[in-house]
Image (cartoon, rainbow, N blue to C red):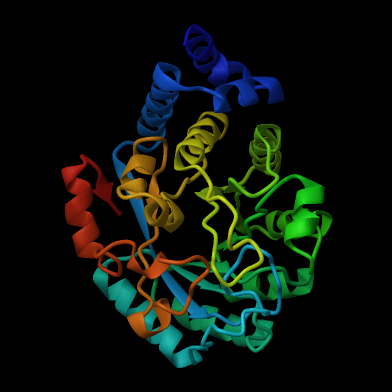
Length: 334
């Protein structure tokens, strides 16, 4: 525990080495509690009581990729697919803005139906509502990212999933770790507030590779880090794999907060699906963002990246209900 206290004390001045990050990720008992409390204290110093609520619209569950862990993979023949028409996406964003959301997140599988020009048109319409627009639609050409940026997109989330190139190659056969990092650097160059993030507990992942995930995000200077546990899906090749540890996920979240004080850290839906009260726990370990899902239920239950995702929280879709709940936690929703 004394080692954790000493590391935390000098983190802001010197930063952590890879070995020190590994040590923190191995913390147990009182040492882990100290780690969580230190991350929460730093979150409070930087952001105060503010929690950013960002409305999530999942507009297509088609995907051209065959990632081994994802329920949207093209090889999943059981999943019923959907696509929202552009006007429905804009209507949902308008409703979100009317309810008080200041950011709308447009997310989908890598669906070629939504060409960059079509997406750019949607972004322009949503921007007219006076909100920030975040996108999460996967890997594109640099020129396509530039088009979306010119249309007004403010943020882009492209999770890297793992910084271990070999593990990445085995899990994501349609791309490569090198290409993923190139896309992330393009997004940064184009002026997006760029988000990345790992999945915790992937089969074959090590504590050392999780340390590399944190160092990669520090190297990229990400504006947001989406960190969640691996949740096995029954219609994927990893159906029988053990789920990721929520406790380890919280430690990755807390160490990321200490390494990246200014970075926005969501309390992800995945931690809520993996454990009751998971998102609330994440908010006590350094998280400062929640992304309520405002996707209509008829679609939401089909956006099954992992099982149980759409059942996570009865507050989903409601700015006011999250605002009331966060007030009980001593937080202020914006």
